[in-house]
Length: 267
Image (cartoon, rainbow, N blue to C red; front, side, top):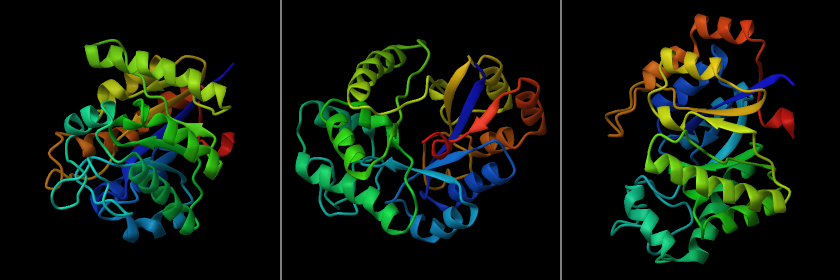
């Protein structure tokens, strides 16, 4: 069995800096697919980039982070201005205790996928901002929408056990895998990048690549140009962009005989 690697760049469409950085990491580096924020500030302007490059595209379902819903108010998950709550720490308790409009969120997430499809952009995979699709109360919506839109691949993010958060991600992810299998959906054999979110520099990336197991792995990355004037996440977007376009990294992948692929090729 060979080592297959999907390098997926999250957050396409959020802003120009991130979107153009992702395209560079794809055209000049090892990124093989991207996940799109349809309600991002730069989505409309970035549609041509997706079409011109032909990059494999998934939906990055977004209902936190201060972005605006595309379908109207989603009760319980928006602020007084109608924007999604900025912090996932506010959103998670509301989802767990079902203090939100379930039907409105289903409509919102469906519309986010529909917008991509209506722009003639194929959707090969589903994931979400801050991995909120893992949560009970959301995962059933995801399965319903994946069936409706015939999307076969769903992200199951899992980190190494470095913290309570990492352990919780593994436990929740394992239960989600069972549910996905029962509904005949697909997910890669392994997931990497959680512990380096926003800080995948060349050293970290080399370490991840050298420790890949045989089978298929999805590697989550966040390349871009500096977007700190928009987002206070502390991400080092340009370090990730440099790492993903590094000639040393390309040589390492070649030396290890790793096959770069994407979700579309594996349908």
